[in-house]
Image (cartoon, rainbow, N blue to C red; front, side, top):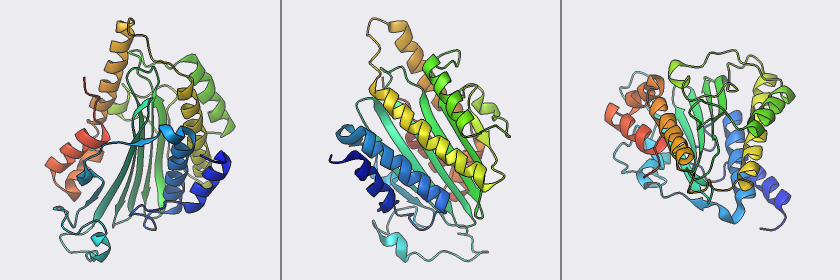
Length: 286
């Protein structure tokens, strides 16, 4: 790769590139998507590979559940009017990558016709590496971001983070003036760290600071991943604890009834279960 800074600048300028939902998402969602994906490509470089995701999960459309429209046929589907039983249309698009350190780098965009917008991102390390599971979400309704959340979710049984992460996260939170104004949901209390940020932004400046913090923490996380070695195979208890932490992360997220309800209403309960289990919160194979 030639000229790393120029490459990253070019990625930002290109924005969401070939995402199907480009132009449908509000600027905060498009901007954050472009910058995170750009960081992955820039910092992981040739180590970044496509994750083998089933093509049926790359794009989901509530108006085309059997996927008969073809790759770009979604543009010809007319959104239903309010009152139509198919309203509101929901579209979900996923991109997944992997690297030598990360088992799965997943970013999801969701757009519903009635104004709901979501970005969901999880960076799953391979379980041979003692790294937190960095994840963030942004939710919007009718042009306003209503909820943001980010946390380097611990894999330790006691939910502790490595000291270097505690120092880094506290420094960045102070730099970007972030303070929680929402409580952690009950299903998240077993997986989020004490440094989890969950906010209902009340001003554009607060949202901008969250986005800057998310980019800075993602960048730092990627940098630290390059300096992390695999846990030695003879440290079986630590490796088992890490695997248990990854399983706990998935199991607890699958208890999120709000996400499940939105998916079930747009598609079916069966599709919601399958999608959450196989795409959003899968666990590494033994």
